[in-house]
Length: 223
Image 1 (cartoon, rainbow, N blue to C red):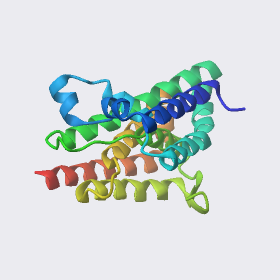
Image 2: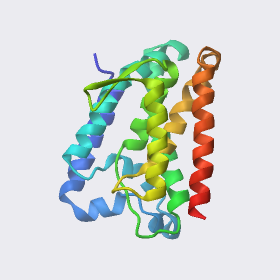
Image 3: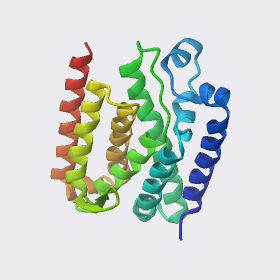
């Protein structure tokens, strides 16, 4: 059975997104945009933008991904935090922290680009996805819901593409949010259950080193 907190998160995201589809002023007020955040102190955008989406396809892809991986992460958190209720709460905290963390990284890279804007739950979804990969690096994912791929292989490709997209500004995609959310997702299971680092040390160190190198490359590119 799907966890109630997951249902609530998905329901709120769907409601807010559809409100944004039909209300330009609502969408414009709550999307991620550096100028209002930095000049008008509208820090709520760091979170609210994660509940808005560009269109139904964007919304559906993010919510389906969250749906497929939420139970796995919640189960892990439940085992190591004292029960299902605690696991659900920790899951929600990690999800929201990943949205904010992703947007903070976006703000760092886009702080001088006042034309930049972004929406989507991708930072939070990336956090949950990467938490599942830390929990079990050999977890089998399905790329585009069809092609099977091991979690650790996907993580390498995903992080590399995110930084490449950041450097090249590919499409209307918040690559920085993806990367920032992934970082939160990587460290959350270690904070909750430090022993997992020993179990999956090689995979985790590999991802952390890759992130550090990619971030340095991206920062140098922006200078």
